[in-house]
Image 1 (cartoon, rainbow, N blue to C red):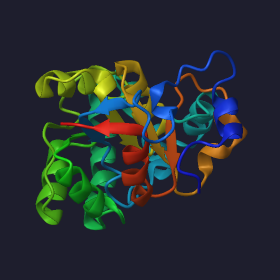
Image 2 (spheres, protein in one colour):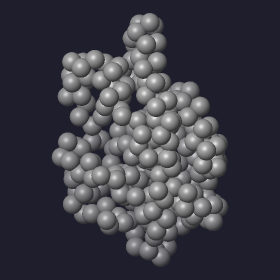
Image 3 (cartoon, rainbow, N blue to C red):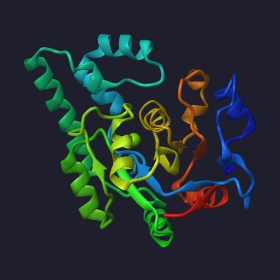
Length: 247
Ligand SMILES: [Mg+2]
């Protein structure tokens, strides 16, 4: 898998005026952007995917509504947003269903291959690392404790508004005292992680282990990643080649 996006992939994502910047300058260029921190998504990025999101959406919405909503949102369903306006009792049941699926995910929690080494690499460069998830704080606490890796700040869905809103990433940049364009958001969701990162003005790296985002239905999405990887193990060299790593 190439370290940078292929030309074909880029052109499919950037049909008009390319806005990618100095990150694409060759290695050793004096124009490299400064990178001071990395912000990660949790589920499916730092952890092996363990939540069956399609089953969760189906359980919350019912079969017919699920199919209707899915058709309207080919790039992904925002279940938290969808249930926001439901009446309280219906919403309570929906949150309960979501929590059940998330709990099942916690039972099968595994760290993503490459995650520990990547965090070690960031430590060696003294780069900050933060976390933004739409999961609950308890899940973040369990993840950090179980694998002995900490992220600060680590924002869960108790922080509103959550991804894909840029607010959590802007909050982390303020807490770190850095500019958004000195940060890269890494995640496995185009509609949540890449959108959150790009909206905030940060770089974005999409983790796509299976190539699912190569599908044409994603060609016209509004927010495109600066980089795409199939494994976290690819990220250290991408960072070294494209950024000045300076805390
Ligand atoms: Mg994810």
